[in-house]
Amino acid sequence: MRPVLVVIVAYLIGSIPFGYLIVRTKGGGDVRQTGSGGTGATNVSRRAGKAAGIVTLMLDALKGVVAVLIATRVNTDWVVAAAAIAVIAGHIFPVWLGFRGGKGVATGAGVFLILAPGALLFAGLVLVIIVGLTRYVSLGSITAAATIPLFIYWQTEARPILAAAIAGALLIVFAHRGNINRLVHGTESKLS
Image (cartoon, rainbow, N blue to C red; front, side, top):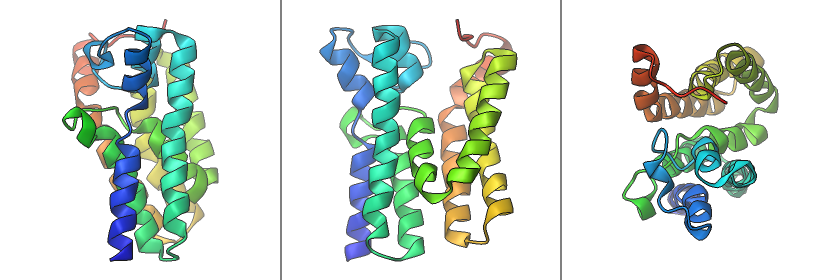
């Protein structure tokens, strides 16, 4: 029962909609009515300013860190992997907001900051390069998420971490499906 509880707690941590709450507190209404419709740092920046976006980014990443650290106390790699997936899923599908949240990128970064910091560093470089070349944050995020399982595969033989990376990447890419459609049709917003 304890592993199941750990996974549920990870999901609930992921479900805390920091971006939504920050924008609401600043009188900016529902952040999901802006840009890509998510609750993450990019949308929060558009609605409430860069400082609010940075705070959202840090808090969303902290969710991933906290969930994984709690799970590591169970000392089972597969439970840690399940909690990692659950916290990302919680951010994307938060129970408190009708299962409509963010894209999972910052929360995923928090997860892999603990589980695979080297792979996260390489994926972060991919993100920076793609955004620098194209000015599309969504494209950088999708590419970074898609490459992190590869970086983890090259660095470790730990199957639970690799499984978490693959599942997390699939969730993040799925959450960006609207962005992908806009990228294909040339209507996606660029970083100003």
